[in-house]
Image (cartoon, rainbow, N blue to C red):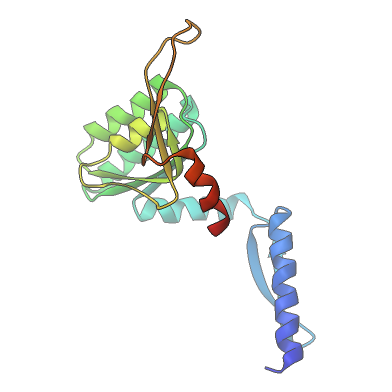
Length: 184
């Protein structure tokens, strides 16, 4: 490839990334004027479904966002389905700020009920009920990514004036997090 072809590919890649940021999600390699270019392609429900089916086929489930009745229902259904298929380990990636306690406890109970071991991985952050789910994983199968943060707090009644204290894991002072961010 000559210099101009390399530059065209780089410019095409930048346009593709800009299109992804604007809402596209998949890429198509097209030939235009004899040179390959990358064009953004809109995500379709079919491509989204194929992505989740691929992860489910690899016995991987996700909890991202709040723990709600809907996310709980989906996780319970996926865990029961995977356990019905095989007793092989299931990996659950969790990145959540927590949410509804009873919805989370439904997931926790199913994690303990099924025969398949559930390995849990914290991605980003696990707080409150999400941290309980993380801790509910198979002993020896609980982990977090290097930059992930885990936060547990005391149980308290909402609005009764009780003071809540938090336990952050790993126990890194907040002032250390700020200098870490530019390195990432």
